[in-house]
Amino acid sequence: MKRYFSVLPLLLVLVACSEAPKTAQKKEPAAPPEPETGRAAFFKMYAPARAWAPDVQPLELVSINLPEVKAERGKAGAWQATFVSVSKGKKRVWTYSVIEAAGNLHKGVFAGPEGGYSAGGQVQPWLMAALKTDSDEVYKTALTKGAEYDKKNPGKTITFLLQKTKKFSDPAWRVVWGESVGTSNFSVFVDASTGKYLETAR
Image (cartoon, rainbow, N blue to C red; front, side, top):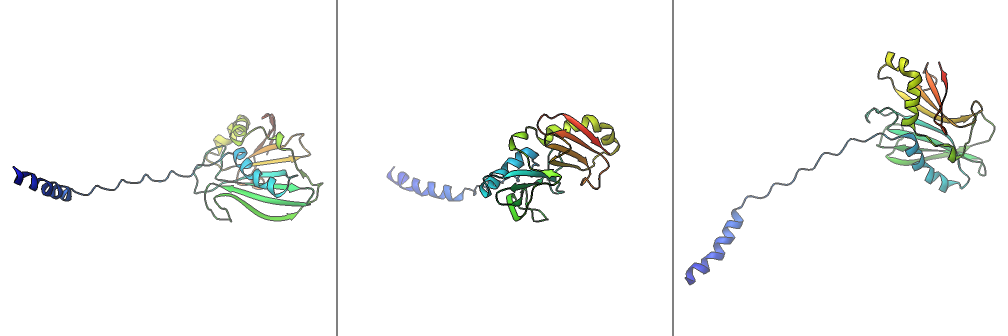
């Protein structure tokens, strides 16, 4: 009996050593980057802009479509916002991107250099409180006026431009069918505060 118990520990060690090593768990592949809405991206850029100048005001917001990020109507892989400071007499551009990309786009929020600014141009600064709508919402509104054009041009790039001009009392989203205003022959203006349709440009 004593001999049996003395051999048992040795057998347990041998059995443990003979067990096959456990296979390492496979890592799940990283989820593809998701595009962002304009308003969400804008507020991510506003915080550092506010730190740059307490009197900062937005001047422009524009979407940047990235081929590496899946297309989703009303959203974009990157956005660029221009802010101005009257006290500094300066303007500054910030970008927000969901990935590192060409064109000096860095993942997250990135500040560009300062430039000169003087009031009085066609595009005017606007109050933060005026931005009450988001790009995915205004796209749906624009589509009610652009459904026929969209059907004739399936899959065409959609670009979003948010500005305050003398044309409208509130800042307005311009939903552009095309890469830019200059290369497009169809776009729809939507009020950024009320979300109401304003005008169609051809």
